[in-house]
Length: 314
Image 1 (cartoon, helix red, strand yellow):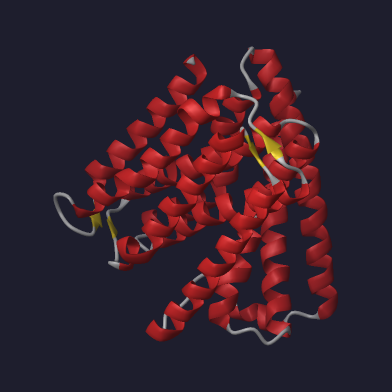
Image 2 (tube, rainbow, N blue to C red):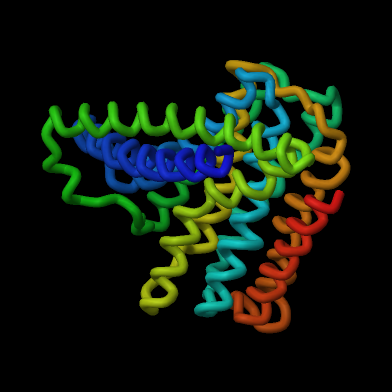
């Protein structure tokens, strides 16, 4: 039954996330926001909604390990699983903006999270506010840089400009209900499965739940790579990791402070997350600059498999 709950939770989160993105973009067009601002802010926040609902639901129900494990595991999966598989299918070209802006910001937020968690064994409301202020500053700089460089933004459907108010409200309601129900089913199923398998909630959250919330990115990336179209960019994945830490954990901690219950989160998981983030620099620059080829993709994927194996063994 717990597996059924988890699968149902995943489906509802994917459906809810899709409808929330559509309604958010349609509403943004109604508010006369530019396509660039919508792509860099509204879409980014909306696509982080599944992780947010799962983390918030878990924190409110007293399963804080799931709140942290979901975000940390999702960040690891984005690089090890999603980026690894995508590079195996089709090599990726990386732009210089990666190490000049996106990567340093991801490392700063990753280190901030480690410092906050290790300094008091919890993520307090004040620290949640600090993360949200950080993401606000990041978005302001991102928009300013994008305007200066006249960046074209992907992921914004122009057809949503014609969406009626009624359809927009219906999409918003479907998205909200599906996300809430999905997070309920997923957290309940994860706790039951952990008890049934004799492992901690943390193990299930950094592996199964994290992969589940990364499935939309993985599916879109693999389909694009197989069709020889533009696959998900490294910048998008790094942006997702930044939003996971700053907005998901920031909002969750603001509503319900997150306690560190499992020691392994601070002694193992977060170092894996920082390690996967850090290793991108040598992979991007050595031996062939600004290319993530199949060998590098295999390295990332195998490293992710090792992480998952050690999580269960530990």
